[in-house]
Image 1 (tube, rainbow, N blue to C red):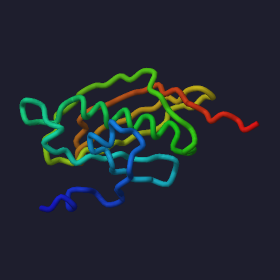
Image 2: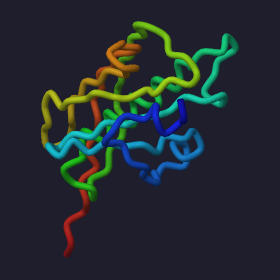
Image 3: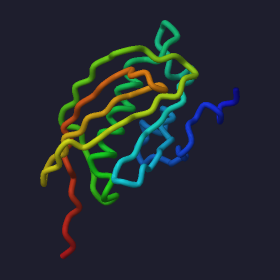
Image 4: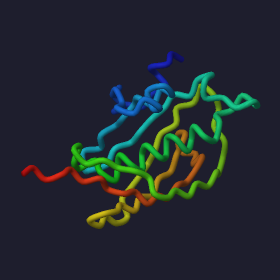
Length: 142
């Protein structure tokens, strides 16, 4: 199976603005068209822990990106900063597997978004995450 065969349909490569995400290969997004976006990552050797599995920090990076992107996806001018995130590891992931997010905004206020996210491989949930995201609204033009 080629690398392209392991990436689900709908995911496209996007150059991230975040240097950390670029460094770690977080470049696949799937715009669902209803204000939500999925984030994907094909795990490779740089994502491994000492046991040859995907490092937990990689799952948290993927969730953090998804929480922030979904908190503001409706407005690309809005920034997002994680205030709090709770992560629960459910099942590990292997190098070579495609990890993707499934997120939804629970509530959005003027200052914060409350977002839930699962990191999955196929139908297998690897991690659940809940985040409070500070909305960084653009300054009004004077």
